[in-house]
Amino acid sequence: MVHTPGPWEFIPSSYYGYSTLWNPQTRQEIITTSGQNDGDHPITWMGEELQPADAYLIEAAPDLYAALNSIIRKTPFQPTAEGIALHLSFEQIKTCKAAIEKAERK
Image (tube, rainbow, N blue to C red):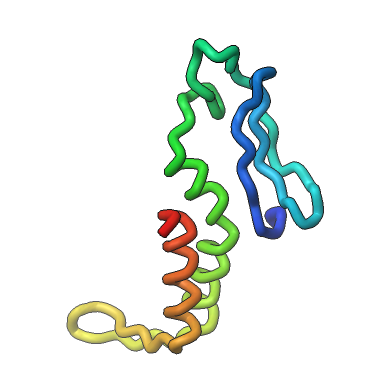
C-alpha cells in the first residue's frame, strides 16, 4: 500500500461544509468530507468538531511517517539489559524533531 506523498495541507470547512486534505504541490485531494458550517455550528471533520491540533497532526503525517521509517529501516538495533539501544544519526534526530514540531506547530 502506498500513501499520497506529502506535503499535506488541511483546508477547513467553508460555508458549504466541505473540508479537504490535499497535497498543494500536486493539487491531489487525499480526502474530502462534508460537514455543517453555516456560521452557527463549529467546523466539523469526519463528524467531529475540528480541533486545530488535530489538523496539524494530520498535515504532519507524511513527515512523521518518513522520520519513523528512517529510524526503523536504517538504524541498527542493539539489545541491552534495559531494552534496545538505538544509534541515531544527527540527521535522523533533526528529521524527527522537525516532524514533531510541524505536528505541534512550534
